Amino acid sequence: MKDILIIREAITVEKPVFEFLNNKYETEVVDFSAKDVEFIMASEGIPLVVAFVAGISASAIVELRRIVMNLKNVHICLLGSHYDYEKFEDLLEKDNIYCIDLPKPVKEFQKYFEDMLSQHEELNDSLNANSN
Image 1 (cartoon, rainbow, N blue to C red):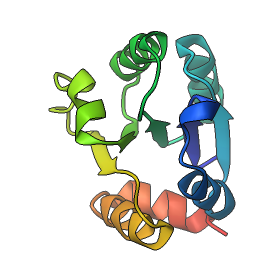
Image 2 (cartoon, rainbow, N blue to C red; image 1 turned 120 degrees about the vertical axis):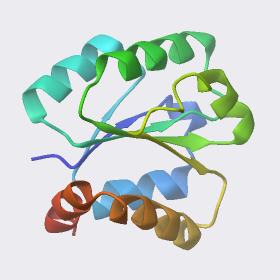
Image 3 (tube, rainbow, N blue to C red; image 1 turned 45 degrees about the vertical axis):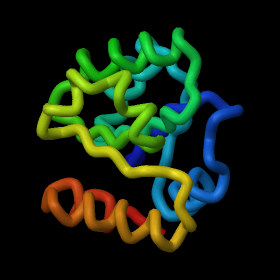
């Protein structure tokens, strides 16, 4: 079973953070496509979606909004900056959406990411059981 669905535009990904997630956890990686995400989430039952939102295109913003609105019982972590999160301000009030500012050194990102996981026992247990 996959742990994390990573949604990104290849050109906007912070490579060290992407590699950390990809190496530590079982991941599935897709571009911003609501259809692809819905299919993967229905078939895989992935508990966490991580979206790299820094500098994404307008069409990716629309797709991510559609994804967030359609996903239920899934935790979503946005990686970007305060400016990037402003585009999703109405969605950030949901209990299942988290933001981690980038860029950060990988060790610092890891601390923030693991702190976020530790706040949700079921998510933490699921990801730590499968992590390398």
